[in-house]
Image (cartoon, rainbow, N blue to C red; front, side, top):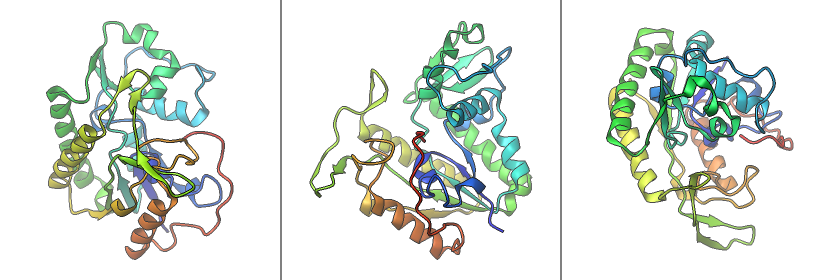
Amino acid sequence: MLKIAIVGSCITRDLWPIRGGGAEQLLYICRTSLPSLFAPSLARFKPNRTLPGDLHQHEHTSLIADLQKTALSRLVTYQPTHIIFDFIDERFDLVSAKGALVTHSAELARSGYLSRPAFQAGRRIPRLSPPCDRLWRDAAGAFAALIRGTELRRATLILHSARWATRQRDAAGQISDIRDVEILSGQPASIETYNALLVRQEAEFTALMPPMHRIDADAFRLADPDHQWGLSPFHYIPQYYDAVRDQMRQMGLTDAFSDRRDAPSAQAA
């Protein structure tokens, strides 16, 4: 029986339809960062009993997992047959607060939690900084040790190698450049800079980890303005996901994807 875990982002999660395509059986760890996964939990933090801000339940669940550091224990307990990594979510800054590290994701910004006492005297660690690079390399080594030292060593490891698209293709087939990209509102980003970061992260990770399969669909790396989650450099045209699925089937994951294509949920990934 296949048991697939994703440590990554919606670019991998979107290989499965929201309903009826097998996503119900996935363990999906997202909106986090390798340094955050291995950091202590945020002291004296208690989440809301009701959803804060405009967050959906699955967004809040991922956020709380990042703050309370429950993802790795869930991963080990899940005993996946396959673990798929992608690093698209490794674009957010980190926040250091009271000995903890958390991911400064859009969900954290929208939740209002940053105004809580647990974050007092916290400081941002910019993603594109040497301290963040060092933290990331250390955490990548810790993840490799976790794989080798637990039952996770039995899992097949897959790297979904991806980059930010520089161009978009509309429904009429017209291709144009993507402009005015932001990490968070008011935080502009250079696609080339973050793609260079992804190249470094993938190289460092594969050098530390046990052997990994690599999949990519760079030939179809175009953003889709009609994507279910909206236009973004990492919300791709349908052919991108088809190509990645085909590569996974060639690896033997023939039962991973249902042929059903039910209408997607209105909730964002």
